[in-house]
Length: 124
Image (cartoon, rainbow, N blue to C red; front, side, top):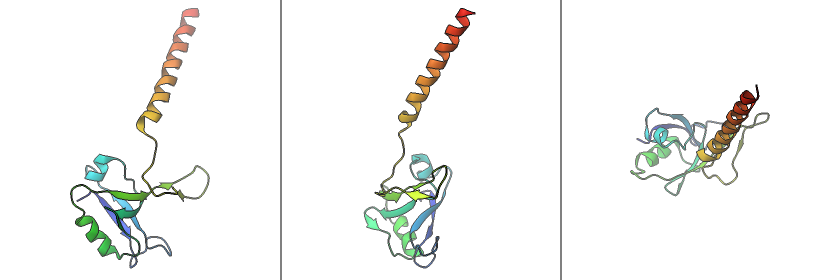
């Protein structure tokens, strides 16, 4: 399989008055886990270009089972601000920061801290 479980559908609404399909669980060491982009709570809008709107749960499961080896998902990422309600990305595309956008500034900050520490120790 694809390595994740889903909830939702017209017959099994996960949220009140919302029949959308959501990722409920990412299976450790499964395809989705190893890929790293999909997250629990993501809303799945389409599979290989097929819209999941107004599908029963079992029909959505069947779409995933027959998706093939190379699968394209259109998702809406659930964002959770520090203080406020849960929101969603507006365009439904997979998002997030690239790892380099986090690591490069972090490494630069760490290098600066080490440099300052060494300079401080030399003056003592």
